[in-house]
Length: 149
Image 1 (tube, rainbow, N blue to C red):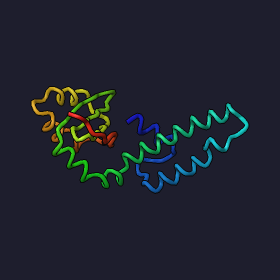
Image 2 (cartoon, rainbow, N blue to C red; image 1 turned 180 degrees about the vertical axis):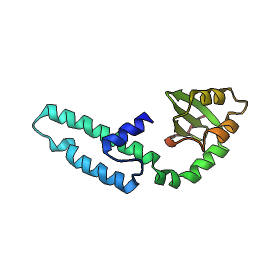
Image 3 (cartoon, one colour; image 1 turned 90 degrees about the vertical axis):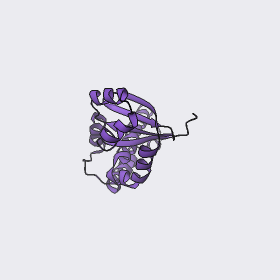
Image 4 (cartoon, helix red, strand yellow; image 1 turned 120 degrees about the vertical axis):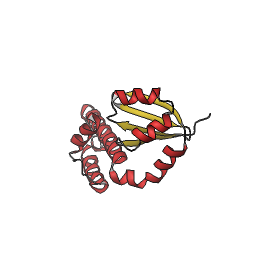
């Protein structure tokens, strides 16, 4: 959640920002911080490049967790989480990443460590995740590659 708060603060948007608002804020920032606008000052150009990278990362991240994005991809998400077995689980600082055998990967936010431990030790990780993770935590899609099994 810390990452989400930082990105919202960077772009100056609140939790209720729509995709159109995010897009508008992003475009305005990129007009101001686009590296091609700086030609003669290398130090300033480097600083602007770094700022634009942060803005791009924040924008893409916030778009990926926006309610409109989640609603638009809900059918695919439900299909993956109900039909595809879990291939890999990674937990880092309250962020849980679950990769599925169909190549999809989702990152879940603010997952308590005890929930992660219960998931790892569950007799059926898929059943535990369906009951306690998939509909309980904010998530975003992080990959869609084909895994060779």
